[in-house]
Image (cartoon, rainbow, N blue to C red; front, side, top):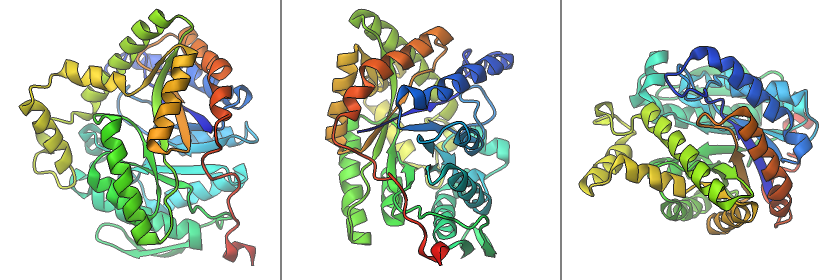
Length: 377
C-alpha cells in the first residue's frame, strides 16, 4: 500500500492566534517534511490556504519544488491547489517544471475551495467556482498532455499558448480532485481524474456510496476503470491506548472546530450561492435533526485515525478495503500540538504502522509516468 504524509502548516494558536508563531510552524513542518523520505513515506503533500492561521501554506507547488531538490524517490503532491484562485496556464507551467526537476514525481491534487474568507481576499466570485474548477481542470489537462492550452470557456478564456518547459510525462491518472458534494464527484468522473478523499462533514459510509457512483460514471464516460482513490486521515498514535484516545480525540476535535470556523458551512452567504447548494442542504438537514456543534465534532473525530499502532493499522486497513483505495495520507501535526508531540507522532507511526501498511497489496499506480508521445518525437 502507498502511504504518504501531509503537512498543513496550522498555526499553533489557531485561526486568530499570534501571527509571529508562523515562523515556529514553518520550522516544525519543514523539519517533519525533511524526514519523510528517510522515514519511509512514499509521498509528501501540502495544502493551499490563505489569510489566517488555519493553514499558512499559500503555495504548495513552491513547497514541493524545494523538496524536489531535497529528495530522490518520494512522490510530491498538492492537497490541494485551489483552481478558482489561479490562472490555469501558470499552474500548468509550475506543474511541468516540478515534473521535470523531480523526474516525474509530481501528483497534482486540485479543488475548488469553500471558504468565503479566501474568495473575498482575492476579490473573486464564489458563484463561479464550480465552472472555474471544470474549465481550469480542462485547461491544465490540455496543457500537460499536449503542451499547449487553448480554451474559450464560460469563465476561462485563453488564446493558444505553449506550456514551457514542454511537459515530459503524461499526467493521466496523476491528477486527483478533492470532492465533497455529490456534484463534484460527478464532475471529476466526467473530467477523468482520480479522487482525493479528505473527510469532513460526511461519514465514510456516505462517501463509499458516492465513490461507487463516481466509478460507475467514470467507466461510462471513459470506457475504463477509474484510478483507485487516495484517502486522508488526521492521525494520532501512541503506545498507551488511553492516552491515544484522550489526546487524539481532543486534538482532532480542536482541529474540527478550526475547520468549522474557517469554512463557515452554515453561513448565510451560502444561501442562493451557485454550486454550493449541497452544503446548504446538509446544514439544513443537520439543523432539522437537532444536530449540534458537539455532534459534528464527535462525528468528525470518529472518521479519523487515533489509537495504538495496532489500532491505527487496523483502522487504515479497514478504510482502504471499504473505499477500495490505493493510498493513505497521514496528517501528524495539527491543532496546536507541541513540536515534540508532533515529531513523536510522526516517528512512532513510521516505526510501528507504516511498514505493516506498505506490506499490503501495492497501490497508487504512479510508479513511473509514461513519456508524452509528442515529447518523445
